[in-house]
Length: 408
Image 1 (tube, rainbow, N blue to C red):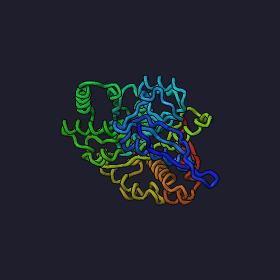
Image 2 (cartoon, rainbow, N blue to C red; image 1 turned 45 degrees about the horizontal axis):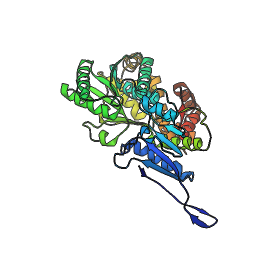
Image 3 (cartoon, rainbow, N blue to C red; image 1 turned 120 degrees about the horizontal axis):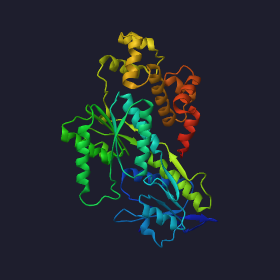
Image 4 (tube, rainbow, N blue to C red; image 1 turned 90 degrees about the vertical axis):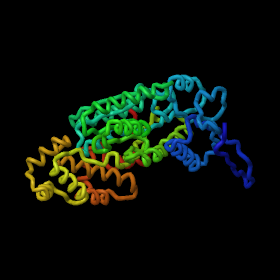
């Protein structure tokens, strides 16, 4: 094992070496979102003056909780992906935080991304693009995939849209050449689905396989199949052809909050709840989803006009004047393609824009957020937020600043 960090303290003007608290990082290093998680852990330790020494596996860069048998340290931040790892973790008398959502139940305190929210975010992006044929490609018997699917399908149900589903075996358990069989199943499934298709994929690594499957059929991404995945691994997303739209899981905040919970456990403080859910940072739109699945050029023109004038005092009459269409046609077209009225669409898009401002510019006043997102008054913004998000803008901002959601 290797040490990532040590330190010194000063007492009565004399510098002395302190004995650091040993913290094991029991998960693979090297993956970009894991590196961000570690940065969050280190930031917490720095800000709170914790003298922590972090142990890893120096050559393999992969330390499992199962490798810590007999290890005596102050605490562990681990990814518990398998039942055997969970059973072993439960047997240890060491403060521990699980940062994996792979298992549906965690035997120790858990800090992880809000996977239901990830699914809803993907669904909203594809519904906004006008897709009525949608699908989810996930993995079987895996908690985070299950919750992402629930969030995705739940949002589609609200718009009356059905969802095709394919679940592959997870690589936590897959051995031998079953990868080839999985890929053949994926190729067959992609070919059978109606197009144009909006497809949400459980991870960037799986999305890369989907792009290959589309190429096998001569399907164009995003015109025939629009893709959204999760993790925002830049090495994958920026080097796919086309570049991959992905949801940033907010790994830095997961790391920071996991260190906060572990620090409390080390000092004998039980967390307020057994599971903390961190909201995703946001969707990073790239070419793989840059399309509108709408055949009618008049509706495409109307949506483009709304997007361009969203921050202004836009009225339905302005859209009608621009398109030259009747109100009845506009209402029908929006409900047919997008599952909601023009008024609902505009309100939801304004709230989405407000959410970005509230998160990215925390010092911006509420009346400034309202003015920049097309709301005449802060009260209108608050009412719209309550309608679409079930909370006020202030409550949303407080949750984002705390980096926490409510476990269900």
